[in-house]
Image (tube, rainbow, N blue to C red; front, side, top):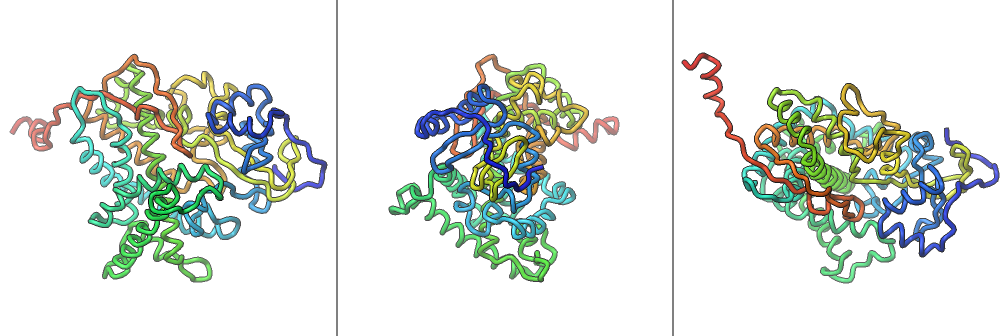
Length: 451
C-alpha cells in the first residue's frame, strides 16, 4: 500500500532523452510511445514531460492498485479536466468534498433506475437506425454520437423539447473542442474572440449555462417535482450531511461532466464494437443467434473485450501530494503518475494473447478490476459506469435483432486520437442489411394457432 515516507528518492528507470524529445514522442502517439518505453524499462518508467515535469508511467496492476486506493492526502487528482468542466465538477473536487459529492451522485445510477432508462435508449436507437442505408458502407460513429447524446439528455432531464434539441446539437461540438483544449497547457487557453479555439469553447459554455438555468427553473416549477426521477431533479433534491444543497452553478458543472463523459466515450466504444465484431464472422453469427434467443452473456463479454482491446481513454493521471513509497520506488511530492490503461490491457502477463480480440475470455465471469480498468479505479472510478454498460448493451441488442451486419476482410481501422479519447480512424464503418420485422399482432396470432 502507498504510504508517506522520508526515505531518499528512488525513481524507476527511464529514457534520458531531452524533455522536448520525450514530449514529441508522447504527443505524436502516446500509446505507442508508452509501449516503447515500457518494453525497454519495465512496468514503471520515469519520464520528463512538459507541463507535468517528472512523471512516472505505471502498467503494473499491483502499483496501479496502490495508486487507486491511496488516500487523497497521498495521491490527488491531476490534469486539466477540472478547469474545462468547472469548479463544481467531480474532476475539480478532492478529498472530503469529492467523497460527499460522489455519495450524492451514486443514487442516480442505482441498478433499479438503470432499468428504467433502457426503454428511452431503445427508442433513440430505433429512431436513428431507421435512416441507416441498406447494403452501403457507412461510419457508425456519427449515429452512436447522436444516440448517446440524446439518451443521456433524456435521462438527465427527463423530457424532450427545444432546449434539449439545442443541447443535443451543441454538446458534441463543445465536447470535441474542449477535449482538444484539455491536452494543452492552461496558458495556451486564451479567449481571443468567438472564433478562436478557446473563445469558441467559452461561447458554447455560456449558452450551456443559460440552458441549464432555464431547465432548473422548469424542474423546480413542476408541481410533481418531488416525484421526478430524472438526474437533474435528483441532484436538485440531494442534500449534504449538513443539510445544504448543491449550488445551481455546481449542478451545471456536474451535469456537463456527466453529459460529456457519458456521451462521447460510450459512443466511441460502440463504434469500436462495430469495427471489432465486423472482422469476426463467427462472432457475428453467435451474437445474432444470442440476441434472437433473448440472451446477452456473449454480448456483455464483447463489451468488456472492446473496452480492454480498444480503451477509449487509454490513461489517467494522478499526482503525489507528499513524498510516497509506491512498491519499491520512492517518489517526491509533485510527481505525476500516469496509469497506463492501454498498456495494462495489452500486457501478456495480464491477458492471454492480448493483441487479439477474444470476447470468450470473459464468458462465465466478470473482469478482474485490478487488470481491466477502462473506468479507472478507487474513489475516482467513473460513477456512470453502470449506465454506460447498460446503454452499450441496449444499443447492440437493438441493432443485432433488427440488422444483419456484413463481415469484412479489410484491415482493422487505425487508432485515431481525438484529444483525450481515441477512436476508430474511419468511424467504425459497417454494412448492414435490414431484416423483415414481424409485427407484434402477427406474432401473437401465430402463437395462438393463427386464430
